[in-house]
Length: 399
Image (cartoon, rainbow, N blue to C red; front, side, top):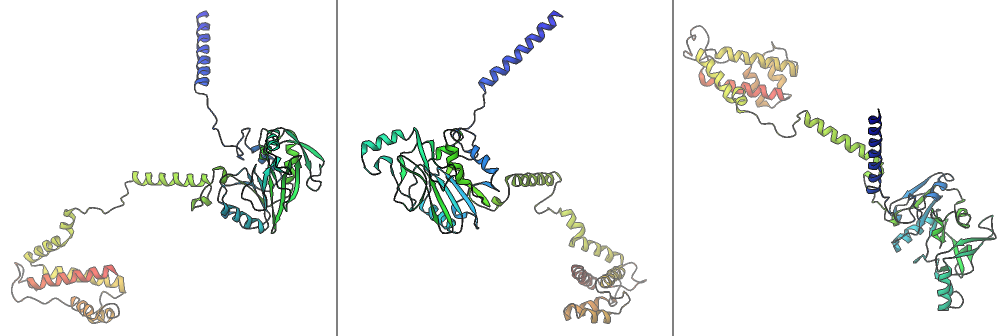
């Protein structure tokens, strides 16, 4: 009993050591994703804000296509948090989309290239002193007092926020100031056509690790108080863009399932032995059923003197085929058959059909050991008539 307990203890210790070593040696590491991603739960992601926004808006989705492909319509919102690689064409396409009655909220530390907004260093406002600009840049990473416009937030008054950008929006712009600190304007909104564009210089307030610090949430949440039909979060300019295509309209799980079913179908066909190319025809088949076989059977009938019977069998089969194809009575005369055939084939073919349905001409001499007992057919006429009968039967079978 004591030995059994020692065995159990040793086994348990071995398993524990194995698990501990396995955890430390093969410890899974989360991928280091870029900042400001709406699906990233890292401290520099924005998933917390997105999840909360999803509970307040009708539809919150990621946008991974070019801005020229933004959906038609109005009452939609596009949120871009610190986008990179925005071109002049992208800005023009986005402005056209806004003029149709949509809104844009842009979080960017230094939004270059946007016409309505111009940015300057905080210390250059008023004095232009280089020393003051440097000091302001250092102070920008600390907590600042934020003055909120009364018509922007019901909270109003003074709030606090950690500002990490040395830039400020030019005060002489034509936008409406939303909030500012002692160094200048941090957020501004301008009407463009039927929509609006809002620029905020503090994208760090949107991150998971800082949104609950200071008054960051109270400062950014009024930006999304309005109700939209759809809210798009731009991921194209974070390096997660995709090109539209034929399969882009279908969900990924449906495309994957269809591919797997297609592969399974191909495997099943392969296992069933299906052929997708030409099939080789053995020569024995053509010998038995081809021209060689016909000549062999004809020679056999000729040697035994059964030419007339062979032609009668062919003629009977031809009449049965005419009955199946055209509804012609098997007892119809050759003239009636010719009249019926004139509306379905050429005059020459109709005359040939009438001749084939008549009695074959008798030969002048003997044609075999039983020639005295039956009406014979000459060898040449027999072969010629058999060939013509075969061609006529083949023609009717193809109709």
